[in-house]
Image 1: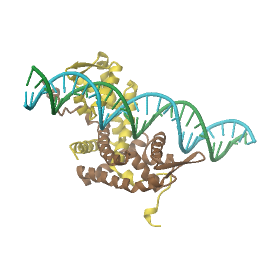
Image 2 (image 1 turned 180 degrees about the vertical axis):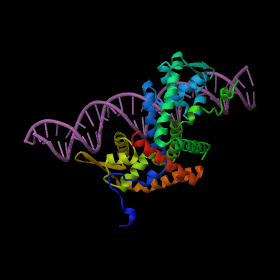
Image 3 (image 1 turned 90 degrees about the vertical axis):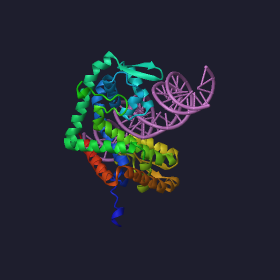
Length: 153
Length: 153
DNA sequence: GATTTTTGTTTGCACATACAAATATCGGTT
DNA sequence: AACCGATATTTGTATGTGCAAACAAAAATC
């Protein structure tokens, strides 16, 4: 009966694996995404849609591959997101050679400011919970880590 | 032509929104999950399967709700994961009243050590990339943030 | 100028995840 | 004993995401 075998059965069982970054990163992502879903849900969007729409409004004619880079999402995922947004009449596609140019519709352009405000609200909400200073530090660390992981490991 | 309109077209276009924790948390999660998928993929598992299997081996007879708590996943997701693992003959379910008890099969028990080793490898890989000290700090911060966000915001 | 290779985008398919509703069981109340 | 609210689990359905393959167009090679 050593200390190691003291497994708290039931409530608050803390697993050894939960200390892993793989687990906690995903848990954090889900927790914050929940906030985003709540804010962007009013427009029938998820956070990636919201982000994508803002990018398209800021850079009309942007291509899927550029968006893929900016949003850190696979090209196929971008295609799917654009499809959805096109279906909601917020963006339109234009073929130019092998490229595809994505433009906002009038409707999309009109909606963007509200969506941008929602981004701010999301930021305010988790800042209030986590603490402004911690958010900055955490975000910077996360971005750095992501970047390092991205460039071959 | 003020500095603000200096938008770098194409490569390394840094969006204002990418500074958002919502975005970067998801990006990090995807990046690390990619490592996990690579390691656990050898067993035909994803990281949640791997985590779940280890928990079941360590606590035979654990219930879905306990797993839901430990893995921070919804009960329905747990059901689906268990289904998959059951299909792969790694765990089995036993009904006891309104509860469901989950046990590892012999096969599952036999596989667990290899899976646990894969967890270690995942940890080593991102530690090497990010730096051991930074990983510890980052993980702690992330866990704290997640916890705070979890308890009502 | 024709063929090969590379690049950009889109599909087919699969999967993890969650919400809402359905189902089943337990613990009380009357 | 019969009902009722609470709890545990499972299904129906939908969504974001990615891999591998298909496709299209451009660029490079011969």
